[in-house]
Length: 505
Image (cartoon, rainbow, N blue to C red; front, side):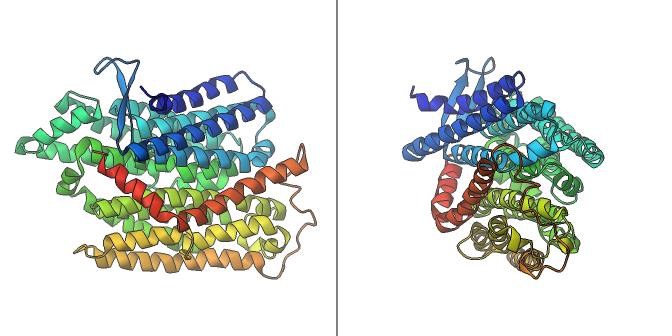
């Protein structure tokens, strides 16, 4: 067996062992170990992507080399490798760019705990991407929930604690619905491995006696993961969770945590139930409807927000709607658009949260009304923020433009949903333009408020100032460049996603 076939297992174990090591290390050592672990996982995922792309095939790795039902399985192909690379890269640069916020907001004796949570979060999402066992997926859903809750709460201010409790309660409702659906699926199939369940479901789908049961199972699993990913109207935890948590946590939660649940849902649709059965059950229509509502309602609320962090958070509600709208089209083209948008949105949203950190800390305010002229004081971070804002609006050469183009292309010719989808895309884009360009204009407008004279000392502080600036601007610079790369080289990513879906069943 080629050693590269072990890379999915290595990626999960490296993050898990990094968490264990961080628990006994000093805060300084823990942050180095975590960054090294994320870098190694990114490199392994990149090599695996090249290997699977060249081979054009997927493979199954037996955990402990024991077959089911005694052993467990990992399954990897182009799509899984691409998503693992995306997760590890965004996690790495979120931690690096948000390091100053971690040092400032979190007590030193709890900083190593923060990196334990980051390691567990990354391990859980990568496990959900690679697992070939549905119950293992559920286990890592819960690990991801606990890690996400900790990332919010660790700041230890009153609002963050309350927000974390709300996040936990809502997430547990989603987990409970998912577990009920999983239990029912195991009851009628007798299996937990995804290929085995798929074979049984194909047989049961032709039996009218199980049609209602399958529909209920699909509904429970879908609603459970929709709640956890923040689809409207289950989005109420998002603004506070992203707004009151540490900026590095906001980047991680918005860019990859919520996407992990969506990736698992797509995996279940294709590899467990079968997308044809999903369409027959009518679940795609429900996802399409709520996705369209989220696209517009999230943007409408974002316009009314004066707090820039909450504005970006409500934008995430709209962007999650885009993903579900694409899935709701019930076609391969719609799924490709949704998967590309997961990557595009992850790169852009992390850029927006992280780049806004310097000028919000420098102005001592997150209110847009207090950010006039900040783009002139903090040129680098304001420029990167502007790139992210333009991407969300859909400017050409940026990833957001390709995302919207893919959704529009997928909707064209789809009788009954084409006009609704195109109308929602148009309205959402107009609304995106209103609130994102407004924030950019404010940053570069004349300074009409009394601002402090310090230039970033409140954020890029401690240790070597030059090292802090290099790490921060290097990280947000890479994320900004990634937005251009995804816009210019989009066809390569789309081809990988399409090829990965072809061998996904």
